[in-house]
View 1 (cartoon, rainbow, N blue to C red):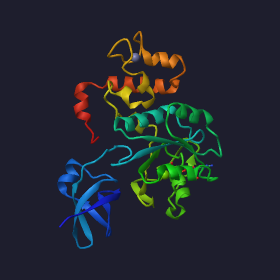
View 2: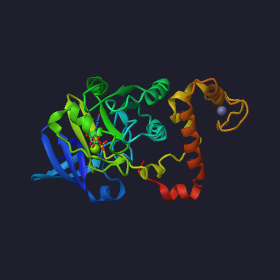
View 3: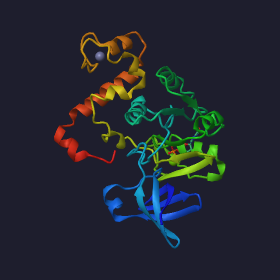
View 4: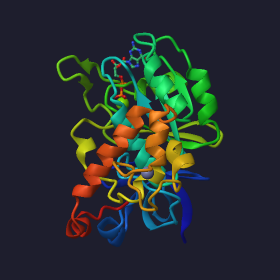
Length: 298
Ligand SMILES: Nc1nc2c(ncn2[C@@H]2O[C@H](COP(=O)(O)OP(=O)(O)O)[C@@H](O)[C@H]2O)c(=O)[nH]1
Ligand SMILES: [Mg+2]
Ligand SMILES: [Zn+2]
């Protein structure tokens, strides 16, 4: 007999599955382990052998991410800060484009506002149309506003290491007592204190996945390979697409480009456009034969 539940934690091939009767630790069937590893957030069918279980099948996913390794999220919460560490807009834009390519909404959480108000960063993303919440895990500023944005959803926290994801989650739910890392002054980023992806229950139907985040190295890995589709992963570009002089305009240097006109008129944020160019150039470098090799479980 199989039952259905959700994977709330995965670590080294062990999957913690929550179901109406409680929780059970499972391994995955061999064929899944090899071809399609389960992700935190997956709805699965499982069987039980005494106190342990086996994940038999993964139910259809609404969406899936490689980094963070989660499935079925309602929104991605991208963390940023303007101090220790400073988040480059490009990092935010890259993650937002990956979310956009999966049709997953992005919420920007600008943390450490007790140390730096990060007004410019907030202004860029408000102008680009993203929900922006300013928080401080130290003073509690914005924590209730963030709680409202998360309510009733399954979300994942991501962002560069040391930006305060685990600290804010602790502020939302102090009983979690998640480990947080001191930011290494020398490297300007945090240690990878959070090594696995785990879902925490904040309330009825509200789950948050804390994730290890990423380092500068990780961000160079390609997860966006479709250069023609890239423009559609920027929601703030939408009003200008399909209106350029050339139907196949890439918005780089073509004449009669509506997106570049919007940029010049100040309607599109320069850093957003620069990130688009940078991501386009990266996708452009990938050769068709490399794409096959790179096929990741996206
Ligand atoms: N002053 C201040 N420090 C913070 C804030 N949030 C996190 N920190 C500190 O930043 C460091 C990294 O935090 P952590 O939550 O581990 O970051 P994570 O890697 O994103 O999970 C820790 O030393 C925290 O105490 C904040 O809002 N204000
Ligand atoms: Mg953490
Ligand atoms: Zn154009």
